[in-house]
Amino acid sequence: MTSRRLLLVEDEPSLARTLGDRLAAEGYEVEVAGDGPSGQRLAADGSFDLVLLDVNLPGKNGFDVCRDLRQGGTSTPILMLTARNELVDRVLGLKLGADDYLAKPFETLELLARVEALLRRSRAEASAAASAAAPLQSYRFGNIRVDFDSAQVWRIDDGGSESELACSALEYRLLRFLIEHRGQVHDRDRLLDEVWGYDATPTTRTVDVHVSSLRQKVEPNPGRPAFIVTVHGLGYRFDG
Ligand code: CA
Image 1: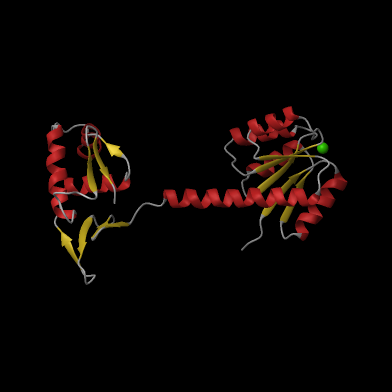
Image 2: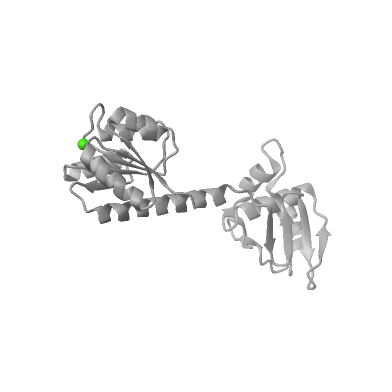
């Protein structure tokens, strides 16, 4: 794993040196800025994994730097450091978009623990965002596999071999929509809007007809649907 890059915005040279050395000894790559404007400029370039931001800084205080970074779209985690141990500072810092807050004087071990926790959290968030953004390529439920790249639906037999199920374009779109929104109840009007489109003028009965034909193809027992279930009085829900 590549080393994590930290930006330390701290105007007190001895503290900047001590902290910088300690963080470097822990394996972090550390860059130091000695005033608000240069700290903000460096932080905004986005290549840091974490910003340690002092509050009392020459040129521009840490609160203003933090607020302007967030307003400018920088999402790098920010740990605020301040000499003033007042609740109002803590609340203000977090309100302006800081992720955590540490009052001076602090134990170095405490700082290291906070740094690690913030980096862990932002990594977890980044990987969750990446998997949420990745489009589904295929989806399997029961003995059915839907291939979203080729828009094909396959039935898998007991021996594991697949045969293609012939679905109409509307059946496929309906199935895909249900899978992509699995666990949610959709009333017939919503399905008409999402699958048929606003321009079409079919009736809600059309939805029932297509759901029924889709069940014939993908449900093991279409008379007692296990995947495309009816939610009485509300609509349909995919439970695969
Ligand atoms: Ca300071």
